[in-house]
Length: 251
Image 1 (spheres, rainbow, N blue to C red):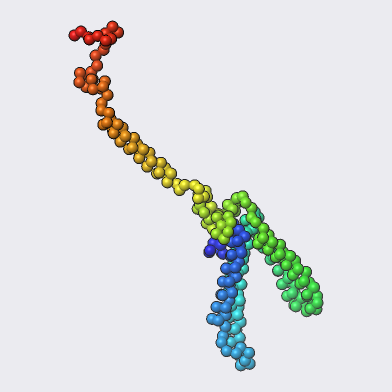
Image 2: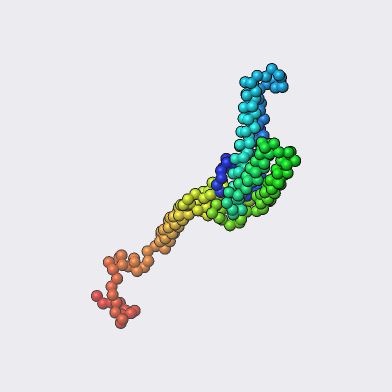
């Protein structure tokens, strides 16, 4: 889960992308309310007797309450988008695409206020960049949240698989699908290294023991062969000639 939310390496599928966004959004909302309760001063903030110290404390508290959740959500969202772009076969730098129209939108508003431009001119200038920002966000929503990833492995790692758990972290690769250097991914159908040779050696030893025991049992039942018994009794076999077949050899 930590790798899913905070790491920029590897690949994730659509289910993991939406799961990460849901968990990250829920965590940021809870952090916002927690910091708001802990940092905002109690009492009526609209009192005219509020001094400069209280006002400074209020501003800093609001900055912490809003800034920390926004920073956390930005990091989580960026990491999810980068890994999803990796799954789509593109560089994670595409996650910076909304930054340009967003920067120009803020610049046009701030610049118009500083120069004292008419509100209609400010809205007209900012409206163009706002529209472009929405187009980019919609394109990223379709690309990252709706389109499936590449089925083959790429330079960012093997395919993450299906479902929330995925499958890229199996076989020695961490979440996100980046395999460990020098260790290829291992699927469930592949045996664990060393287990096959151990089982084969054990089976061979069992087979040899069974064969030896079988030979001993057969020898005990049948007894020694006749030629072997004669050789043991007479000290060896005497050679015979061709004409002595059926006759008793003379001494």
